[in-house]
Length: 112
Image 1 (tube, one colour):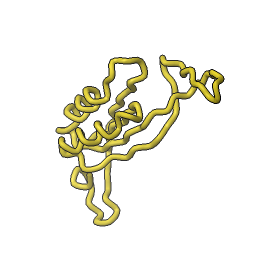
Image 2 (cartoon, rainbow, N blue to C red; image 1 turned 180 degrees about the vertical axis):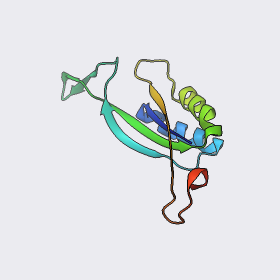
Image 3 (cartoon, rainbow, N blue to C red; image 1 turned 90 degrees about the vertical axis):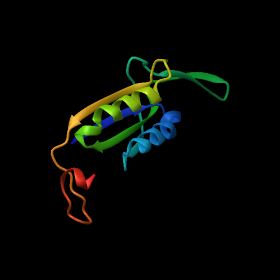
Image 4 (cartoon, helix red, strand yellow; image 1 turned 30 degrees about the vertical axis):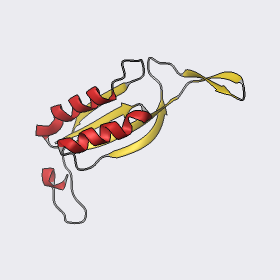
């Protein structure tokens, strides 16, 4: 099993969710986050005054998948979330040692 963390632009969330659902991903967690990378923030306007903000709004997706789905999920996220502009985001893939469904006690891939 793998744990995939993806940081994407907020307006891409629905498209990415729909694409992952079509692959058979049965659940994910989405969290509104702020951060920066090479983008180093952005200029914004508020009441006619321009100011710099150093943290850019993003959405963090957390997805647990079986090993067989990892490459498809990563490919789908990178394809759908790509706009071609700076700040499209990142995808991280980590090993997931164990998953347990609390309601039934099922463990491993069946718990996903």
